[in-house]
Image 1: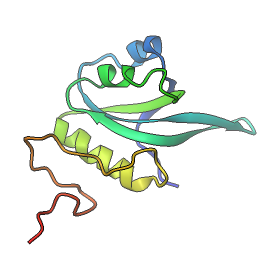
Image 2 (image 1 turned 135 degrees about the vertical axis):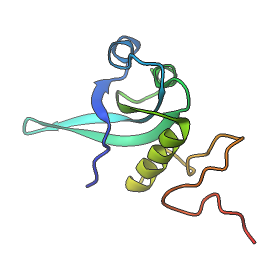
Image 3 (image 1 turned 90 degrees about the vertical axis):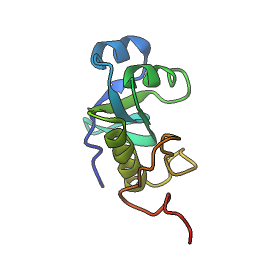
Length: 121
């Protein structure tokens, strides 16, 4: 099974988000829940996303929406966060995400794993 390469998991609530997501930055995240078996806690990825400017603010929009935990990482640019979101999307199957991650409207970024944004000839 792949690993997310993200920090966490952390409880998905406003206090925890403010405590661990301390920089205003682009970032990628995974939402889900944890399962404990034989003293080993596993994070179950159910949704992946990103923030182009403020991952703290974006995560807070998910509080109370059915996910109990999150993982995240800061990225130095919105494009890097988009590429990480795409990689997470392709690494996990059966996500709640119904569509491939979208890029910012004014950008021509390409998914590093598929041809989702290649123009049809």
